[in-house]
Length: 303
Image (cartoon, rainbow, N blue to C red):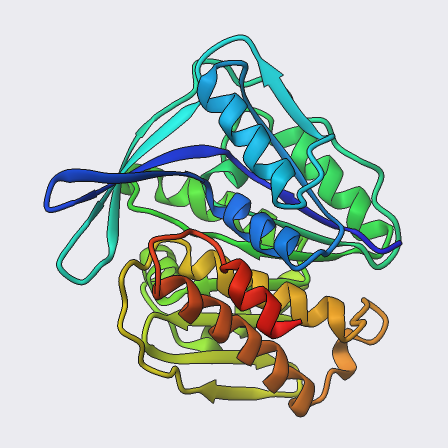
């Protein structure tokens, strides 16, 4: 059976509104994607690590209850990662992280043809564990998996710019799709022009670029298609997890339409319309609540 693998960090988010904590939730960029796909009953495996503490137990229980295969999660003796998420007046979050105190190696599966892999965020550019990650991605690409990369780059020291860009581009060179926000690309390259970025990234080997920009149009660029998709306005409660769930919608669309590396370059405009629409629906659904993932009610309506 075709599988989906998400690689990333597990974080327990404590959300603040008006500088007061309002709720806590298991989070992390690719984890949010994995939970939504698990609720959709896709065969999703999450590759991560967290402690044998109370937060780790909460995380493991939550993932299992939401249909996420946890066999590739490494538990260690120590503290799990915690984040404080402060919502501003526009419901956007700024973060303060309290890192886990150990970083054991991840356990990687053997990926087969047509599997889908998601990776990204800080976890994808850390020096610790980078060599095994790149080796896994190289092998997965050779085995004809579809690889989705979301840079999800936060602010960084200008002295680190060259090193970070080099790592990001090495990641891009192993990817099929790059999906990122305008903020990601402006921070890295000073531009979010899809034509300029795709011309650069396609030389590295990607087949599709998707750029999101909150409530502004989503841009798709492939070798055959360049299209702008308007975003329906919603009454936003929180934007936490919106981008992660856009990615979940894209992966769900690829899975449902049986997109493979062999037929990827032949995805027509109508099919891309459906894939992008799912991404936007998933993102909008998350913005309507304080959850990091699509709701079970939304899932029942979709299925």
